[in-house]
Image (cartoon, rainbow, N blue to C red; front, side):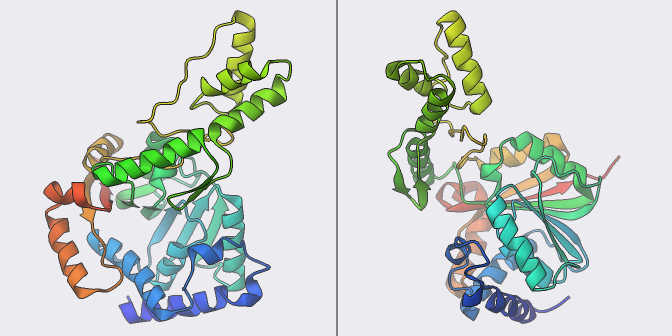
Length: 339
């Protein structure tokens, strides 16, 4: 087990190599957005402290542990866990450009013995039963297609007594965040294209569905395509095609209309942009999958500001009354021991 300073030093060395300008033609350009400032020690301290605090909340030391990072992206957290002495960290993701870059980083840093990055769904990893001591979902649970399937999979691959840690910013108990997120939903579903609260809408989901309809059913009128696109919210490509075929056979329009209180679905992938969760309800819900779970409000502190860290500790201890004010939440879930 190393010290915080040792973790920072190891992680900083890695990111100095990763973020070298010579890699700009080799890694995905988005890496420089997500890891902006990571050549600076202060930013690395913030990253390491974020992971360190999350593990401390679960009273967990990852030294010698086998970890699954579900939704690993470019591998920022996985690299920190490796620096902390995890025996092996498996990162899985379905975003190929991020995953390809993470795989290249592992090769460049010669970390194949401690890090693995694979194209696998978080809800169907195909890893052996009871393989992991820890499963992490960092700003990822909001994007899983099937949350139940993820909880079942996490319970399956965790050892008895293993820990599932969730950290997410979509705190549905916070009214400001709920309004913010619903605005994002509406823009992704209905447009117009452009930037919205840090997200980029290239085409609305409604327009994408219309494009699918136009591709497969070019004989339809423009008005029919517009109305069918409006009435096939939450459907993927295959479901849209099936709904239009049913319309042509019966002349009955589909009735899957957009609900502003429900997260929309990308018709190309079936993915969701940002779910909203009531953290307490989510923790209770996880019990049916064999977890003993507890939700915590999170107000920050990774920057190292001592006043903020003290405030977070106090407010976190009062999560039952402070959750509606928290910008994000954390859940510590322990897999029950077999009876």
